[in-house]
Picture 1 (cartoon, one colour):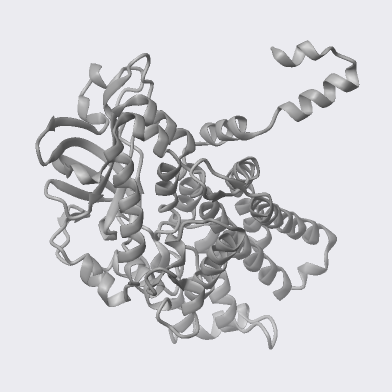
Picture 2 (picture 1 turned 90 degrees about the vertical axis):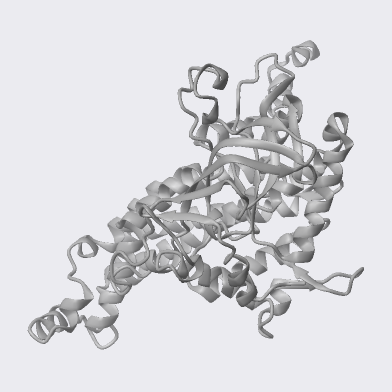
Length: 484
């Protein structure tokens, strides 16, 4: 059944090994740098019980009669994707910000494994059964599921075997109970999630058919020997009134250290066979790219809203040059929207019988969203003006000695008094100028692999035959040129 926010909070009070700023975290849900994002995830759970949002967040399973999370539902028809999009929309509008790694953006990678059952059955039928069981468990238990991908890597000019072998996660021993793994992975949200799908990064397997590094498994975040070493959070570092986004929506990133962690055989999804690992890497974001790209739509909305409010308060929105820049932001936003909408309108059946977004449109939409985000951030920064970097903090606006001066110089008219203007400028600063803003750009750039991999996904999924055949006919070429 769907969990409540309170049940989620209790589920991560399990004596997991978490470090923040060099100190062991005793209670993750109450720690000041985790509490805001834990509260957001708890709110998402509670929305499935709220009468106003329950039907947006959950559905009644016909077989069991139980309510399950829409984000975890396997997609079989276009309605499933429209329902997922409506669910994300409800969350973003409820919390008033953007969060990415909250489950629906990572569970899709398991569906890619579901599509690869035939490949995995060639390796070991048990692995295929494990995948189906874990997908069913995610639905039935409403677990907070994340996905660990990137390793520390070390010297990339060398094979992992030719340097410290722990730079890439690998198996060190097989036992009757399962496999023992060692190494490290980076993962956003692992410190406050329940489990992670851990899989290999893109590796040069060469001619090797078997490798201890070709590994995919489910790992419980409180597993013995697993350590979460987190980067410093943004929450609590500066006043929330001056940095409203950083203090509410920072999704903490973690180095997960696997110090001889036992993975039971029932949690192993593929192991050693490089063909299986390569297949999974090639289809990993077949579904998860949709909710990931969808998030950038809301980032674009925030950029447009902050920029337009700043232009309107001083009447600059009447100028043609300003309108052109606002239109450019709108084109970026609608370009993302068009790719998402079209990818579902022309969705395709997957090898496993699911309905996957049109792969070419989805991956080209991801390139658009991620590659243009830095430019759009700068455009919004330009429209917001220089005051986002020079405006005093809230304390100055409330101090008896400076309040009257700031009220005088920051009030524009009856609609825009000093306090509203301060709030808008603080929001815009945190959106495009702060440490959190810089982190957001880098995260979007690399969260689903680096730009060259985004383009490689486009190359592998775009239908080049149509333009080739068009040119063949237009140029009067023979049929044989298509056979090369």
